[in-house]
Image (cartoon, rainbow, N blue to C red; front, side, top):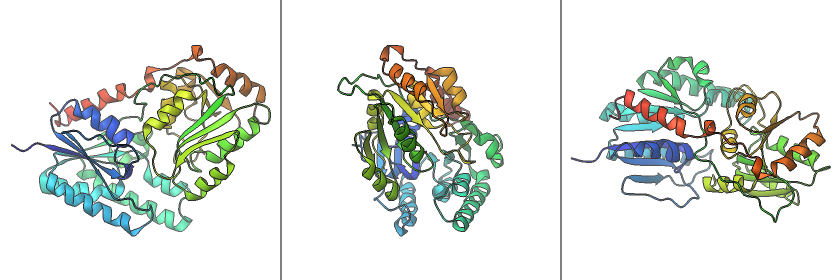
Length: 370
């Protein structure tokens, strides 16, 4: 009897995406003998396939290109050969591919909603006003029309339960908590405090606010801002490269970087900086970096009144600040205290283990696992 296949499919997320591969797929692999296939954008990491885990990276393509339109067809051709028992999809452009699998093979299909794509398009300034509104409405119409066909939905944020009413109660919230806690070390070669800004580097994630804040602090405090992550926009990438100097250290790329490099940066940092530009698309969301910093006991600098303030106050150390009125003395005391590793405060509430249990329970309720 041929082996069963399970597929995780994505268009823009790397083929070894931290959520799809490291969290969902590897957690599932502990409970099934099926082969697991991951489809996604090429990665810079060295892939480690096994006899049961297989990677199918697409060819590189620009975000706005004709090649992007072709990728769903190549994924579909491969899925026709695999005849998967389950498909977990996280890209709106691949919804039709997933639905065809259900029609042809009776595949159980799950839509992993990692972002409210409608709100992202509508409220963020990635496209001109008219274009972004047309794209947002088209995408939401597609999600509403296809929702009844899906067997289940995963929400990466709790707030999606109130934002995506058309899904009703067929969902499980699996927050993007940290995969593991990183043991932080003190690097004696860097006596000045090091602030870390990690993850996706865009206007929306607060890169301009981060630079402005650190430039203001560095007038009175001898510090370094370390920026580590994926910087997809060429304009911001070039601008950051021009700013690099004594107070700004960069490890950035226009392609997604291996997650191990984020973990390495957390290991050496003294404080983490979270300064998302709040808008209706993210005001109730929890940045993954909040969980990553809290799990490893990395003190967090964040904007006063943000949605993640209650979590930070309850579970870890943090310094809320006002962009318009920075208290230099408080910031200096906080950063120097953060350099003392003996005072770390980490939390299990920030770790993926709790979400893994919910993920496996969800699959059992769907009769996908025994």
